Length: 88
Picture 1 (cartoon, one colour):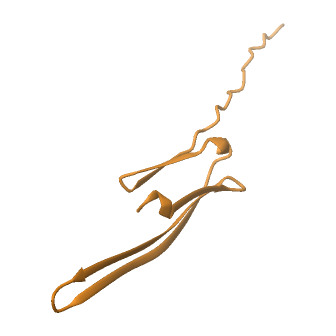
Picture 2: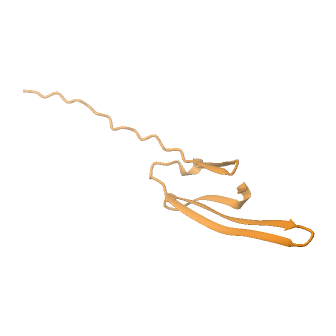
């Protein structure tokens, strides 16, 4: 597929939506016959993203027909642990 045929979106509620449509036609001509094959199809996939992602930094690349979507995570700070002395 070509990158123009694929759409990547992030919807409200941290939902990643990947959709597309393929329209292909192959034509063979010979002296006595003429053949045309058509392959059309739509697809749609949705993925719920975890809450700790940076939605504004989602990136997508297409190389050799392979779609790669990068979703960076926010750094989650670990709670600070403070030791308390026991008196007595």
